[in-house]
View 1 (tube, one colour):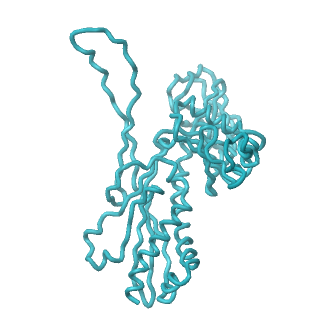
View 2: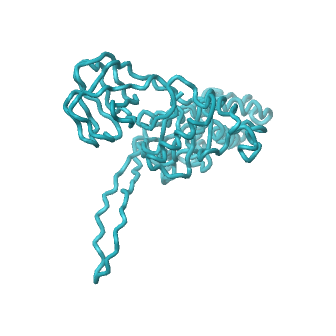
View 3: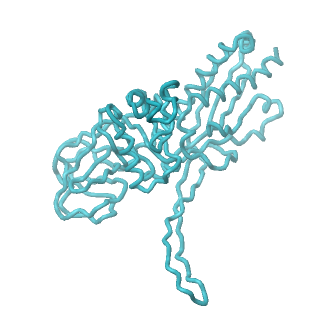
Length: 381
């Protein structure tokens, strides 16, 4: 039996890796091109964002012109997500792993599904910083046409997102609407038969479409009749003071607009009572200056946050767990971990013998952050 249990480590790990690839959508679509050095929980991965450069006219001279200094910005991905999904097998159940492939698949897939859901949820969690917005709250997109996709494309273009490597992730309701559109369904529009034969949208209108059951909803604040004060604010500012007017709340992650300004803003610091003359902060900075007069504030209602984004919008780092060197040879035989280039994830499987049974635990260490919010757009539903 000892050899069977030892062999099962590889069998279960391989099944777990396959299940993770099938269940985890978001890590494949975002940027995970960072080093795979082993790390510990709480360690940080620094990402350098180069500033934009301007061209200069050439004037022949004996020396070249001194280029302006570049001051790159940095974003940090903290490896603060460390979770496991475990299960137990007695010795007979370990034997069943070999005899009944369906049994192996069900046991492992249930554990992996829980871990994949946690990973996907953490990536979707960065949506609160995304300020691009198209669609209508509480109305499932793609009901009659593809305007939600072309609208999102326009937003990303205006926000200077690169043209390639764009994805659109829809909840099942939005995907069902989209699949019912002739533009996504008919081979004469698509140029292929995948929409008809396989029920897949694929790559259309500059996006690779995917569906995910964990697309989140954002519960909007309840502010009504809220306004800014009459101070006036310069373009680029990211905080304004409210007048003592209106009722309700403005919450982190809300999308708001100010009268006289078509830009949509994501709230980074809200106000639990808009009548108290508090302040709110937001991204991006004001697109246009506010004159010295009160400006009405409109809060987008509760909406499903389908996402359109370039892969550089979101940074995801998954790491092997350092520390195995301190284990004995016998202990290391009970651990397997690998950085999977297909899913962008690092998966670890650890086995521990208990009282007449064996405990198996899949685990992962990762972090996620919103790197370039201007490269993403909410497609409200």
